[in-house]
Image (cartoon, rainbow over all chains, first blue to last red):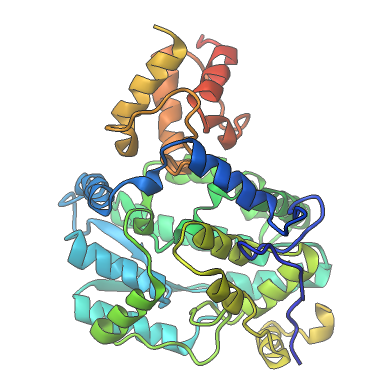
Length: 338
Length: 82
């Protein structure tokens, strides 16, 4: 049985109609696409820079961190295509000496481990594997509460904290992440109400918690927390400067880095962790949409992805067996989230 | 020199993406893809130094940094450094 939520979507991008947040006009176009057209029509944007100029800007930024220590940067690698391509760009395009960091949140797929090992072996990069049990301990409590929470946001904060702590420990001032244009979430204001509600709810749950109360400051204000603790570490997304093309990336990393697509991951052709099935199901059910829809829609608007391909991705099936498998690892059943 | 004019100079000097770019006080800096959250955090210190004000991350909404016009408004309303 599939657990995907059916939705009426914008005919230009794939954002679902969500009253009060994403409105479709009489032609079926969403408010975000209409605003995007206005911005593009009015002014020069960074997107209009030539590829050569963008790459020159990126090279200038990263060159400031070269040869300052044992490593020039950290590259957080999940084993997915985007992070593996980012590692490739760091080494082969930008000439950096990175420390690859793989964080296993307890739900990492076996193929992700192999992809990371292959890529770092071939590129000659050092690899640090950090496995945390935080999610395995924290998520059951959160799920049992029944509160509206965006689990990807909760997990990302913990992973970012881990990666930046490693940067600090090794004296590395630069962190590269394989974030696509659609994942530069500061610009995706349609997600802010989801973040606000999720943050409020998790703060209420963590307040006074003997095991996880120490995370409260982070979730109360992530911007302030990360600035205070890690403000000196520069974070750059190379895909802001380098063209992202799904087919070309897959061809290159398969050919040169022995990358393999996981047998089961949501969405299609991703290497997201096994808990992502649960996170996405709950996001659709509780909020109507979340980061995946937003990311894909940004990529459609920027021309990196066709709407048809974005729709195919977002409608990747969420099967009962995938939900059950992830929940079992937490000692939970489907009834705990339905 | 107005706050806006000075801001444009500071942005050109501190943001690689804006160094050779023609922009004015209404150009959308965040939604136009020129600056990101990390840039803003760095700019807060630059603006505090240049204008002698205190800008609290706690009170700021990052969207207020989308145009030179809105940044100028934040700076003109910010408390002076003691």
